[in-house]
Length: 120
Image (cartoon, rainbow, N blue to C red):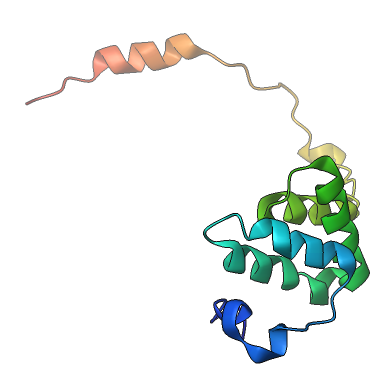
């Protein structure tokens, strides 16, 4: 619901006395300096199902301690907490390996360009 109507944070009765972790509440207060603070807060709160309330609160706390509180900073901090999936190393079968590696030849393009006649 909040994604569609972020203005509900300003006027919605359920959000007046919302029991949030202290760092998220402080983030909320700091975001109010931005004209789009409600959208920023909604985007941060939307991360709770994916990352968990504790992780979002920790990211907010880190942003507060760094002195740079914004949606982009907090989402970046959350994204960095996730482990990157390990990349599977693929071995190339011998019959598919190149016998001669490709060579960059920029002069080849220049020769082609000279051969083409452009008609206006």
